Length: 327
Image (spheres, rainbow, N blue to C red):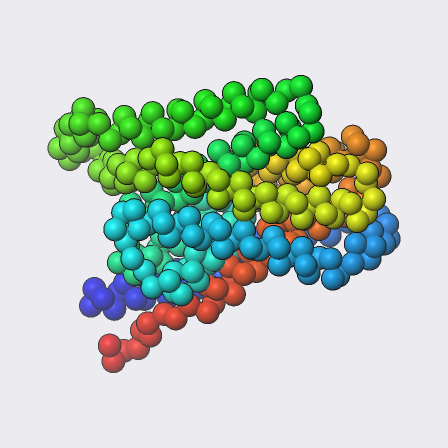
């Protein structure tokens, strides 16, 4: 009965998540349609036609290559905790998490943890991998911003480097503190008090600390630079095609600052906030509002929305055990 119950729970979770995804997509579509109508749909449509469907298609393929980089990092993180999942199945499970990336802090991506439990991966291990994944994304984006700022010869490049140093060093020191014998002693003492339900959280942090060594911190963050750097270059390419006259380094910096701002607001997927940050920055460089809106919509189509579409397709393609009465 317990096996049948777990299978039914997985199927129900699959159905509920699909319904939730549909609501997120519907909300995003309404938001985008409202933006287009507000700024003038004729001008936006004209700019999209100038960009071209073929450019959007190529941009989508290039931007989607980031998921291959990120999957390799994710699989390595789980293997550090002695987890092994069939690669083909694991890849689809990873992509399924993208279906709920349009959530505050991308917390919806932890949905893949429920799918990985069915593959024998402990919950605290997959959540630890998620922490390492998101942490290295933040560090990688700050590093990418610093590199772009340096290339653009901005005078505040040192601010990016300072933040990078503080975040990297702080997270590494925290991981080493969690791995220390003194921390483990106090954690075991607290866990012995049954009235305080913190054991799973402690196990998750300890698993994260196992992953978060200095070499892996560097490699994981470098993967983030490659993944998000590819998407930033796609945005720069779009800007060049529409004749904004903005340098590639400045375009990358616009993308990084908008992404970090969208994440900091904790809006679902940065919806509205990241687009606004892109539009205002572009207009500050003298780009007209319809073109700025077109660029914001275009880069989000080939990153956020295409990623969510791949996630939905992957989620629907996963095979789930049947829950017939004969089992």
